[in-house]
Image (cartoon, rainbow, N blue to C red; front, top):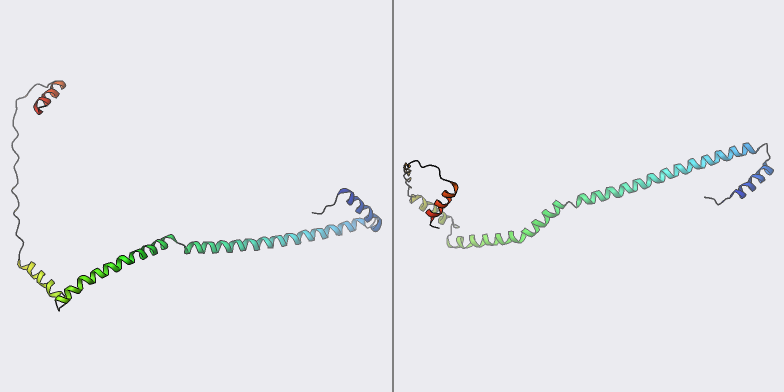
Length: 166
């Protein structure tokens, strides 16, 4: 902090002894110690208040950062982008739907309802042919064969090859 060496301290001590005197020197050093302690306490309080202010400002910055992050919710952004991209599709679907409904209402003054009624009544007049259940197939009885002695594995493979023709 201060650039004071041992020689300067020795000169100050000699001058203090000469000016103050050896009798009042301990009282003067005690007073200097008290003032130094008060200065340290004041500096400590100032430093702690300064640290509190810095901590609060950092917390405020952190709060604003968190609020900004909550506003930038990716789900909301995705939902907004999907709804924006779906808008042209929705418009084209509505135009197709209105194009289909407009000619039907132009042909029929009832707005296309009578054609729908006719199709419903015609469906009622023609009953669907009833399907007859197919007869259940009976499985053929199993043929009885004479018991043969068990063949060797090689003989079975050759017999199978001979039957398949290859």
